[in-house]
Image (tube, rainbow, N blue to C red):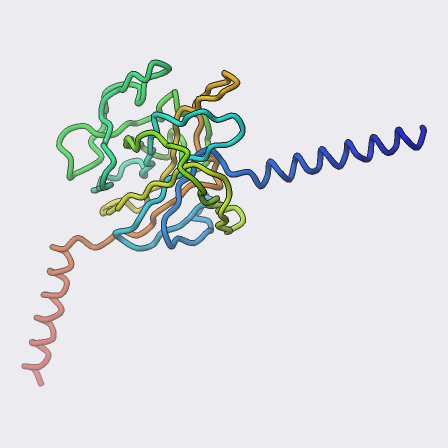
Length: 249
């Protein structure tokens, strides 16, 4: 082997290595993040942003990478434990209970068949993931583990710098361009709620496709606030006990 050949091979290996690192550092097209959350694991739900307060602010991100020409049909997917019901409000995001014809797929697949939300009349949830957005199988975004709720969060424009919320490393860096949106969220009743974001990516190359955030760029809320009526009952019982004890003295 000639010296020139070895140099070319060495350069080729360096380029490959740089491509690998560049890919690892790249900002995913879609992300979710709980403001003030910490990166960690919730049982089998690994590498997620964990929120433990209520209410909280949910951040959703659409990043323009490579030849991205547009990001449309942004859909927030909320996974909740099977068999549980509760309340969930997401200010500014429309709950989807029937199929939207995007022209390139139905989101969700059809009418909702489960009644998951006690603060919404009628069926509002789904037993299985929407086929169009069934692009990843990270826990708990899995059939047989969770039931699903869908919210419309709209299109994402390329407005300027955005953050890379990487729960895998625990780092938040200003990286890439696109749009970040924030939503006020409140949850009761569910032992956890998990947030993923999917949407349609229009590419200048014509390789349009549906995408969803990777498992390292999602968010999970684990706090179940005590409903007001139960809190008042608990305080009342404690006050009655205190009075009885004082009388017994």
